Length: 272
Image (cartoon, rainbow, N blue to C red):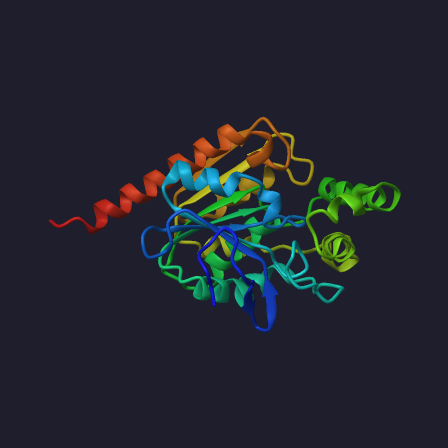
């Protein structure tokens, strides 16, 4: 049974897989919901206080969950398929939205989570989704990003990174390998899902750090070039995690975006 709580008594169950989750602010029956989709090594806990701050700043509910293989969710079978982000978007995310009782939502994804959000909005017709916040998204591989992941692989082998990840992940080895080995697979080099942008029909807020070590502004340019929907951008002085490294600027951009969406919806439903 799904429980709208910061500390639910049990995980949600999606296709026989237990997924960790946490909820903040008003439930879906009272307000739209921001659904947080984490990065390649993220989880519920690694959002830190961002869910609570987002709810406070916007007045919206916030749902965060850990994908299979991350946080305290069930471990994943490895290796992950090369289309794991597409599978998450079309097979898992719809069931998460359904179980949580989502009525209207904004998908807020970071890194791989941003890609999953974009794939969902561009592949699944779901009128509950009213907007997208894409933070450091990936639509295609870049050599500089792959080099950074290779450096992370070396660091994982030579440092205490595994022990540090164990504070947040039930299976730190699996979490790291699921991300690293997939991105560095020779077959992944030609991965490109840019075409999903063509089919997105809700407003997008795209956020990226100027110093992002995993992707260049070419990812944001791809959105602006291909999108048929309204696109706002926020390019900030930080690296790959604007919500932590430039938190105030990120929170401000997100709050303004959400407030504008709510004003538009209110104007559309107002009686003539």
